[in-house]
Length: 520
Image (cartoon, rainbow, N blue to C red):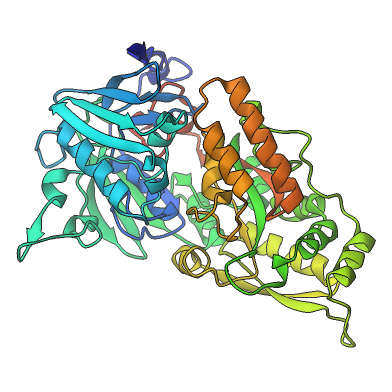
């Protein structure tokens, strides 16, 4: 057996004392201006972006990502992968306790992963499709055997919907029947192993957490965190500037110019393996966009630089069909169509959509999230498509309704999305693989499915890249999506907030504020 990742170098120790050599101060409450309500506090059951911004405070994973997307230890202190890639052996930390005082063991890991495997709606369900078995030979060892090699597996264990949950609170019965994890009362009062404990949730108002003094990676510096729900970005900004929040997680790009000039405010930006794109409904309901010529017409009609300059402003205009942030997998030769209005009109004529007497070829509905950037992008797209005779109706929804309408029901013609497309290019499977969770388009290409499957079984990066290059070439030919821009993450906070996790390499990064402190 080949040993890998036996221990992660503790480079974070140096970071913990602060960038300028300051000693962290204990105490205080950090208030975060937050954008929405969680669906629940079951961290693995459903896609829940509002919840995911909070889950990392309460729960832990087997392995985690740091700020540079490195896979690092979390509840597992080390692990081994067999030479054939079929067996993963994880060695768990001893002495970890759930926030109710019960011991954490391998049984919790096995139960959590088995639930993910048995619930198709779980966001991480697809990543476990190649798992053959999960066993706990003792309380501190977990062995996962694969049906066939799956090189992205560790990265996805560290990503979305893989928080370890307490078996002793969820593996219960009522009236002799098992209680489904969607109906467990602890979905409203969660118990985790993370740095903060749940105190209170007032829907539409706030979520309050307090520090977990027994956190296995060290007692947090903050006493409390309050996620103050302020869905309107302008209200969130005023609350932040007036002293009602220390950290604003609900900014829009139009506000950054003002914020950068505001005394005692830090605006920190960082490239992200995420991108904005327009998705066509190519297979989920009757739509003109089933016709490839219509999709290309839209692509030629749209001017993504104009959309970027007017609506997005920060980041970079997209040029290809995968994020360049994962550079080894990015195909620079798979290009997006260049703006050409006349060619767009010609293609629509050829597709059987001539201009009618009212100047309209056909009508389409564009669905998008609430938020200024989304609204601005949608408005510009509507204006640009009107130039070729497509009349667009705009529909804006908050996140829960959007998920139901778009992801679940496929009730749209066009939709705007973004989303993390790392830490591995196999993430493309979720977005363009046949029947996969975030393939809102209903897109299906057997060759794409085959290439994605084969690429995920190769461990040499140079060889793997060849598969993903081919996938991007096909996407540029089929055009189920129209990439618009590369996302840049933005963090806006008062200058007394120190050591946010997004800056700390070697530390559990995402929404884990164990090392954050207030210098005031």
